[in-house]
Image (cartoon, rainbow, N blue to C red; front, side):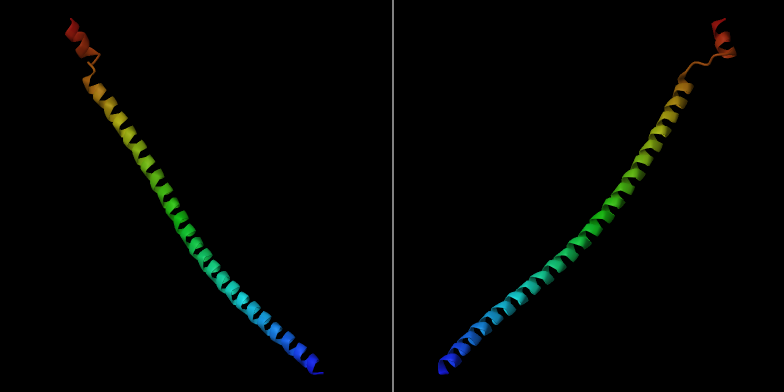
Length: 99
């Protein structure tokens, strides 16, 4: 009978050690999971910020492209106007000058 008690006590002690090891593993796993979730939330936040910045930059690029296009049109209009000013006039004044 004493042998059965001793064996049971040893099995119980071994089970307690196993339980403690599993509890420690569980705590470490839960801590790692919390850290992973925090990191994921941080990365998601950074992704949202980067996406918003990308959208802002895209809009800025569209605005800049539109301004450049407007500027090019204005420059072309000025070139045409300048060319008209420097082009000899045809009509009465031109005919009078040739006579």
